[in-house]
Length: 95
Image 1 (cartoon, rainbow, N blue to C red):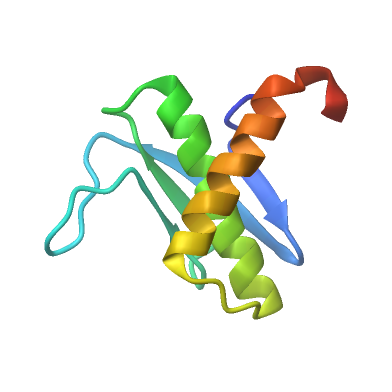
Image 2 (cartoon, rainbow, N blue to C red):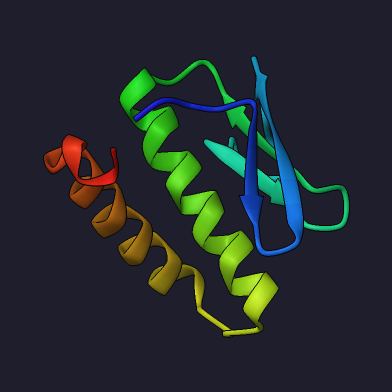
């Protein structure tokens, strides 16, 4: 899996940006998805593996938002980790 510059989710095309430091008011963040701006930001202070897993997590948020599914953060975490492991364990599946 590669981290692309852009990812299409439905009719939106999210720009993927790498940032040295991400946080909200109280927490350091691995990444963040900005729906209106169509931007996903990933923190470069973590390993490449973590960045890739975070990208999948943020894409689950984008899919959830696009389709008005209503996933909880816990569901996004679990689904994101599961999808990332599927992609990592089956690299030729998506060729």
